[in-house]
Amino acid sequence: MAPSQTNVPTACLALADGTIFYGRGFGATGTTTAELCFNTAMSGYQEIMTDPSYAGQIVTFTFPHVGNVGVNPDDDETLDPVAEGMVVKWMPTEPSNWRAADRLSDWLARRGRIAIGGVDTRRLTRAIRQQGAPHVALSHDPDGQFDVAALVEKARGFAGLTGRDLARDVTCAQSYRWDEMRWAWPDGYTRQTEARHRVVAIDYGAKRNILRCLASAGCEVTVLPATATADDVLALAPDGVFLSNGPGDPAATGEYAVPTIRGVLDKDVPVFGICLGHQMLALALGARTVKMNHGHHGANHPVKEIETGKVEVTSMNHGFAVDTQSLPTGVLETHVSLFDGSNCGIRMADKPVFSVQHHPEASPGPQDSFYLFERFAAAMDQGRA
Image (tube, rainbow, N blue to C red; front, side, top):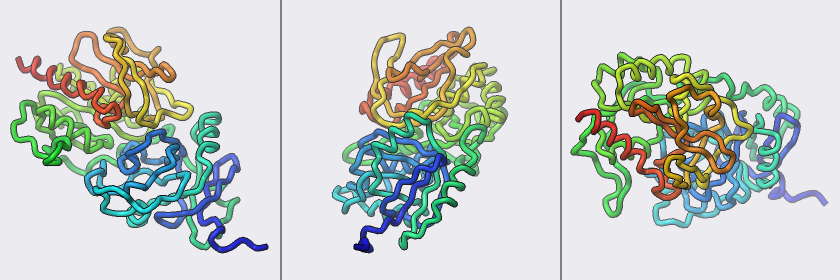
């Protein structure tokens, strides 16, 4: 008996090794190529899809209930989705949450992002862990017409992330001011009106909630594009400089970012970095970065602060890591992953300069790592004194 039309796959995920996954498409139609990663968070799919650090990647969500709370304007980390697409176990249900303003599928369609549901995400995640993050092609066709061989060739033709500077693609076009603070009941997002510190944030793909955390820590924030020079930064007479998260290969972005950071370090200004900003700082200090097998993506990553022994539950999103063995004299490792021992933080022994690989603003603990923003503010207080 011929299958009914409702059983015809309308989406296809093709891996570069020839493995094919069929499912039901939603969101936009068409085809896209990217690196495939998996994320283990049980919530926050909208924040994940709009996190600029996911540029060039399709996200497999290991938690099956994706889309069940809908989407809303407050949870965007940037203006539009940046991740190329999404892979889920179950098709999204009707949203059931008082904050929902739209359906996930409609939101993705308007913003040109492809998604596939009905996939065995356990099998797919095992493949990613065993083989490394694969290059893939994802196609959505309501008629279910797929040239599988052509999709595999598209996947094999994807350039990958190694050697690619993606920060230029997601950074701001021009500088701007930020004063919105963290969400708090009952007023929601409020404005910073009594800033104590002037901070310049270099935008390699900054998440909005990081900027909110800086504002909540008493900072008046000016955001500059990723290509800003040290002169651009220092001309604003900052009390501190923040290096944001972002996508791509840190070594490629470092071609223009490292000279800027070194110029700032020469002036003894407090510096704080997160994610790609952490990797940029490490490169500027003389360390190396390496591509990970499948990276860290999720909201349940235990990280140990070496000096205190405290363990924080953190959010992570990175496919490259700082090589601990390459840290030069005078640069100390401050945090490590309890999953695999990889580096999650550094600081200079003689300057108020530090960074972390994880995302303290993402509230997975929910506030285990907020102290890092206060530590940055304290360093600026001390510098002013």
